[in-house]
Image (cartoon, rainbow, N blue to C red; front, side, top):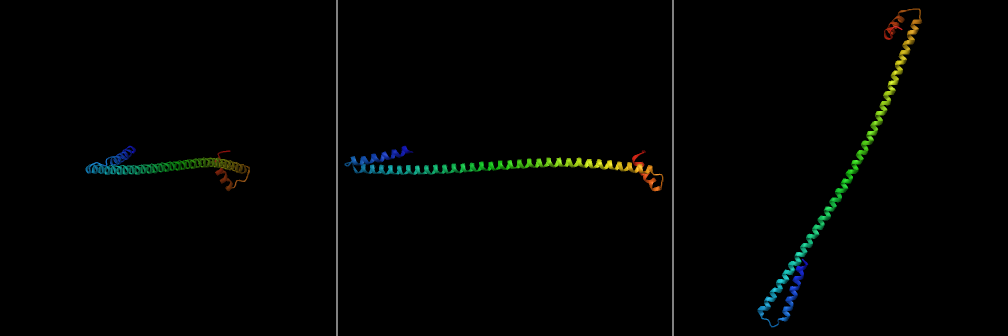
Length: 160
């Protein structure tokens, strides 16, 4: 591109020097020189125009590159935000898992407590039945109410 401009400038300079050296040249030669000079000016204008177009193209390319760079930065920021969101989700899931583990442990402890309560209640019932059976055996008067209790308790506990 620079070479074309330099060539055009040299051609203009050469045509100017020719005009200075040929004062006696014919009118036709002078017309030819002026025509060549005008043609060289047109070529120079076209070269300058092409250079401006190339500059505009380069500017557009740089603008596109900047936009792509901004898009890439936005993509990276979105990915970082997604990574942060995923980390938060995993942290929440881990907390829920720990909460669930604590709930299961509490439920197991409650189940153990309930088992102990049922065992104690069963033992108290057995103790109460044994106490009632002892009292019924110790009584000499066998009224019908005691006979019924004895029959019921005896049917549950067997012969003691």
